[in-house]
Image (cartoon, rainbow, N blue to C red; front, side, top):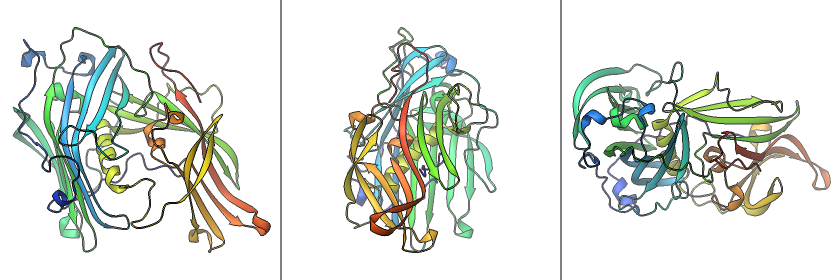
Length: 404
């Protein structure tokens, strides 16, 4: 199975046409205008300094909008409000709930954004060598005062301008002392935009408000019915000319970063609590990827603009099955029209059969194969991959530990 990249390409922007595309409530995000929310009796001295200070009710809210035009999937846009909130604290774990709405706070219409997600985050240490906010090339960093969500912040601005070479312009603002913004590593604003002859696209995200919890309750760790990913694992069965093997993907999170580790040909004793050498992604980048994916894939299943829906099939997942779209097309990369590539996608992304399935595979194909058509309807497979099972790995009584 060709999974979508853990760090997906961040899309690029042209804002003027976005208003014409938005069916997502009010046409203009609320930006930096909302006054900071604090519970009665709170003071700035109570601001958290790390995940160890997390309280139930801690929350950040961002406004976002994304746009893309000129691709094979047509012109698309997405806008709304993004919320990250602490709903339970059981050291060393903090449980987050992530949800996205339209700008008018109504449910977002895109299937990727229409449901909330649970994300357990471990209090711990920042991963060694965390990724840079802006990858590659030459960046500049400056210190400045900025105003966001009703408060002044000392911030660092990371910027890169590739527009002289037909590339994008981008910048990010981070609070130098995250305080109540520890949930997203102090993120205040993201802007990424570029124009091309045939395509233009972009995205922007800005802090709207933040809230400090009261600290009087611990909350109840939720069932992992719709997990973002951390705390879960999944396995795929891989078949190829060089052999058959299982692949296990373990997903975790620590101190504001998401972790992903792949075990090829895993043994039964492999556990998901060993994340040494894992891929690392900042939580704020994962949120951006979610928003941008709703623009990269404006309709479900993924298909080019105007293309007909693939045919329907039933895909088996362990003891159960789901109705899925099956897309088959010539695979010219393998030598000609006699080679075919097939992909299957679930029709209902939120089917009860998919309960507990992490987001990265829920929004991807269930199976993929490359084969050559043989005589009398037979197929000679070059490679084949399919999802076979998944579950949770956190050994906590409050969490669902069911395995499919």
